[in-house]
Image 1: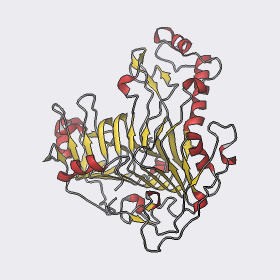
Image 2: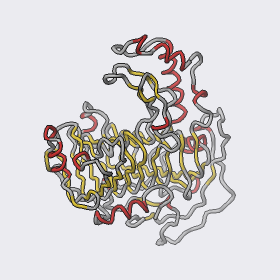
Image 3: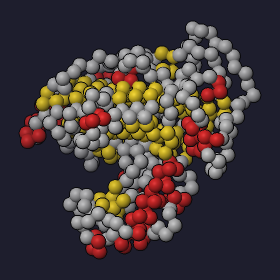
Image 4: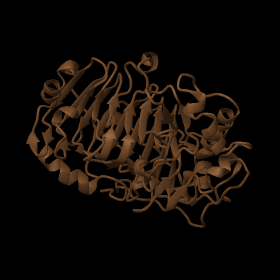
Length: 446
C-alpha cells in the first residue's frame, strides 16, 4: 500500500499453531507446534515482503500519533502463528505475554459452525418465548422478565463466550491471500495498545438470541448484540483493507415477529469507551444498517471526552443505511471516503452527536435519484462540523448548507474547531470513487 513503511527485521518462518479444533483444553494451555524450518537473516535494509510485517506509516491518521502503530511487526519466529480454525485463532491470541505476535488467518474461520442450538440453555424454547411475550399477552409497557427471558439471557451469554476473540497488545492479525476471513465471530480489541488488523473479510455475527423489548419505540423492537469488531478502551489501532459485510444473512433475509424485524445484527465496527488514536483505512463497509459508531453513549464523557480520535480515509461505504460514522465526543477526520447510498431505506451517513468534532473533507457521495444531499448529515446533538471539498454525484456540494436548507429545524453549526494534520495521502475527490472502489477491502493489499 502506498505510503506504508515496513519494519526491517530478522526474517522468520511462521509457526503453525497445531491444535485440536473444539478441544475442551483451555486455549491458553494449548501450545504452538513449530514447523521444521530454520529462520534466515534478511538484509537490514530490505523491506519485508510479508504484509504481516507492515506498520502504519508516519503521519497516517490518528493511529500514527505518538508512538505510532506497529502491531506485531517485530515478532520473533516463535510468536508467529498460522491458524485455520476459530479455536486455533483464539488459542493463538491467548498465548501468554505481550511481546509482539503475528496471527495469520488462512481461509475462513467459523465461530458458530455448530449452530445456535449449541448455545441454548436447557429449557429454552423460542416458541415458548414468543408465546409468553406476545404483546397481546404481555403488553407493551413492561420490560420482559420471567423464566424464558432468563433462559434466553443465559443462552446469549454462552454464545458471547464462544464467539468473542480478544486481541492482546502488540499484535497483528492478518489474512493470508485473497480469501481469508471470519464468520460468526466478534473481534474484541479491548483495553490494549498497538494492534493491527488487515486483510480479513468479516461477516457480521448473527445474534442467536435477540431480546424483545416492548418498550423500545412505539411498537417495540428486537435488540441484538455482537459487533463484528470492537475497539474498546484501546489505543494505537490500525484497521486496514478489511471487508465488513452481512454476507449470507442481510437484514432483508431476517424474519419478523410481533410485526418487527427479528434483528440479529449489531454494528460492523465500534470505537468506544475511551478508545483513542485509531486509523481505519481502505476498508469496505457494506450492506448493513447501523454500521460504524464512534462513542456509544452521551453519558460517557468521563471516559470519552478528549479521546475517540479516529481517522477514516479511503474507505468504501456501500449500501449502508446509517452510522458511517455516528460520532460522539471524538475529533474524527473523515476524508477521501466513497459513500454509495442505497436506493431504499437510507437514513444518513454522517451523524453529529454529543460534543463531536467531525471534519469531513474531500469525500465522494454517490446518491440515487430521490435522495437529497441534505440527508447526508444528521444532527443528533448540537455540535460543530467542518465539511469542505466534498462531491455529490461528481459535483461540488456544500453538505452543511444542503442539510441546513433541507432541515431548518435541525441547523448544524460550521467549524469543528480543529484542523487535521495527520494525512499521509490526500487524493482529489474526483479520483476517489475509482481509487477506493478498486483498491479498498480484503484481498486488495497494495
